[in-house]
Length: 174
Ligand code: S3P
Image (cartoon, rainbow, N blue to C red):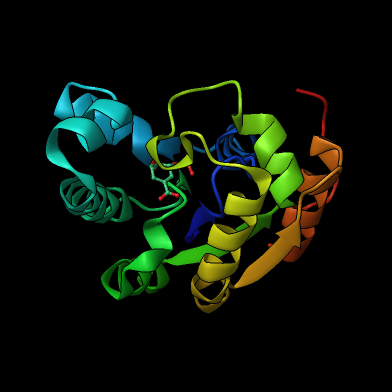
């Protein structure tokens, strides 16, 4: 089985959906941001503050390459992974890429209370909307399947993904 890769804007539910799908399909889930933070020994925020975004992006590509050496795993990517063509090539080589979409309003609600996303610090719904629009073409270029995950029950999102993947569409309670 190819790797299943989740992309999408910050707060679109990639980590949550990956974990749930991983349990459902009994597959290993790799969260790239967690691996980056572990590798660096500091938080994503601290990486951005201390070393800058371009250093983070280099680590991100390194960790993506390592993750893609595995087979049949589910990978949750940071929202900016699609910005580099090199990353797209790596992901497309042995992965099915699923783009999770939510509205700027939902993103704002989900992310405003946490301070672990350096690019969303003090950002308004309007700012988020602009950044989302600017990234849209990158997600579109990357995705094999795009799905609106806004205001949907998580089990329904999982069901739709499994239908797309041509897997049994029953979702046992886990
Ligand atoms: C980023 C998204 C974050 C994290 C970093 C940069 C982005 O991950 O990789 O803060 O550029 O969109 P999440 O999408 O999991 O929040």
